[in-house]
Image 1 (cartoon, rainbow, N blue to C red):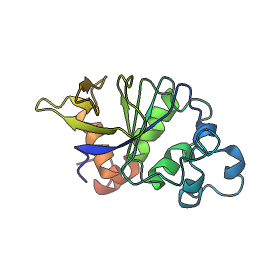
Image 2 (cartoon, helix red, strand yellow; image 1 turned 45 degrees about the vertical axis):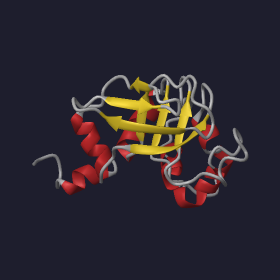
Image 3 (spheres, helix red, strand yellow; image 1 turned 135 degrees about the vertical axis):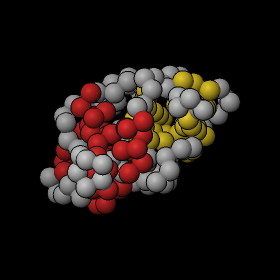
Length: 171
């Protein structure tokens, strides 16, 4: 699967978005099936968000995105809703690891000035650096660079898909 360029409509959130805000704990008591839970994505934080989410939308946030518990369902539900990337000023470490392992692109960049509904674009330059293009036409560097192995893993759909395609750690 080709990851880049990745372009979509910005769905803007603030700082300290917890995993429980991404998908409420009360919903996880019923099921952990992402296909069922996607209708409840961010329902307590932004009640109107789940219904208008379109495949290809990009979550844009501030600092400490994905703080709280370490549940993978907070990554698999956005994926099930068609979100392929989260661009934030910073991530909780566990969320970042879960995102990459499950095939959700998690990118650190300056998100100031990006408004709800803006078109954003993530693309690699000739040297492999990742850039975020904002609606104003500004190119914002993403930091730190994502290692080529990680890009391959994300392109495969996450760690398990990557290893299955390679029949384990070899090759």
